[in-house]
Length: 119
Image (cartoon, rainbow, N blue to C red; front, top):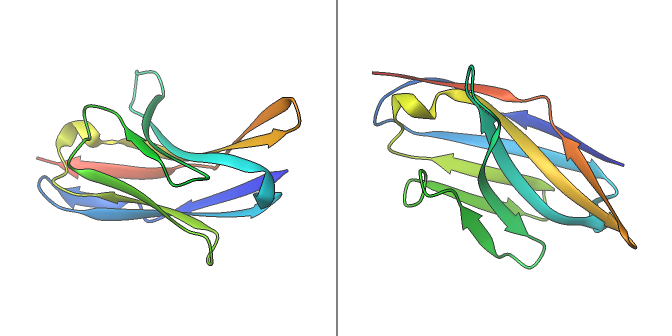
């Protein structure tokens, strides 16, 4: 099992910045990837950024060049730096961990943190 706790959301003006944090615990050696997803009201949850165990990263086209995902293994924390925020970035942001045990893969989610960008 993997537990995830997010923090760092809030209200910010367009053009501003925030840094989200997600502390992970439990079966951390089984984590194959960590991701940030978001869900805006009335929309489907979407992948924002991901980082693999080896440090490879990927981003949604809508956030490339503005958001940066990083990981601090010593602190068991994954971060999402959000720069040049736009009103359309308003959403609940969720931390997601993929856990692999043999042939099985499990998905774990945090409780979410609200990001609101005002115009």
